[in-house]
Length: 312
Length: 141
Image (cartoon, rainbow over all chains, first blue to last red; front, top):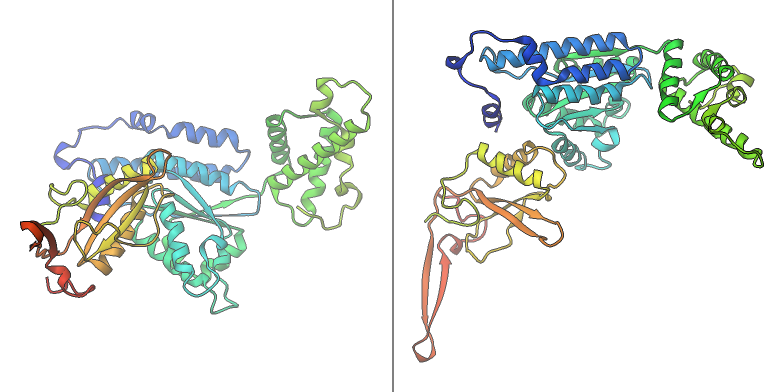
């Protein structure tokens, strides 16, 4: 079967090789420029990630050319690992990577199947293998995104079925490289331990990408984009309060970057709605409905109990 | 005698690449793709054993081809066919079905004639292979 898949991919033989190649033309033809620009535009910060993705895209573009010129026949290893704290955009970047791989022809369909331990590992003997294979079949031709991959391996329980899922995954990652790209994601330190105890994974993964935490100004920019998408805006006073909110919230436990910001904004919308409802008699301007005021921000528990642990 | 059933059966056997394309066509049309096998080649034997569950939520034929490879490993000495079931309203039936694996040696069928009342003749076809018990019909071939 691998032979046929290769036969589908291999391009003309050496005899029909063109003399020169227009790299710019090639770049424009595959249309990854839009995806890369989208990545730059839609995601705030994440400079090292964007640089790495651009590098990988360049490598794959050249690889694609080499394949066309029959200089190489092998599919490069494309499995990746994304490490970083929660809410740093790992899933969003995975979607973009899938689009890039699809446009360059390294995956045939470009769908992203996002799974966690629950989807791969069964509950009783003999349940795991069919479950994992079912997911793998669905992901064929696309990208399999395994979130919090370290949960697959539970060293404290030697009869844990996760090991079985890992073995099947490793086998497919090796033998069906041209059918499927696997992206493992999770927090940095725990992924490190996961790779240390499963050396098979580390050697099969070509690209390790680390997602840094967002700075305060980046978080504010993210909040602005989110509000803009929801057709809300801060009043100047509220914006000032929110800057203070971010610097306080960052130092508290369970801070999960962009996700915490989104949750905070949701709670502020809630407070704004009840503030407006409290004064039902008043006639509202469209401006009133769109604006979040300082009071909506300052009512947060972050200000009253700075050191207390709270939900993310 | 070469058994001809379903689509493409008067063509040479499909290569894996051709099967992949047909399966991809089925998946793109939204058919549920099934792998079935049997060792009873009688034309009226409609219901073959299924290999696994119908596959209707795959994006790419590679998943089906993997199952087919598994099925061939276990039942490589039997007939295997791939069928595509269209569940959409108004069809609700098998839209495509073709043989993807056959035994090395197909002994064919024997025609029985039975004389009955008033010079009538009753006909029956019997597969030579099916005279042996299920499971070891094709192993020698």
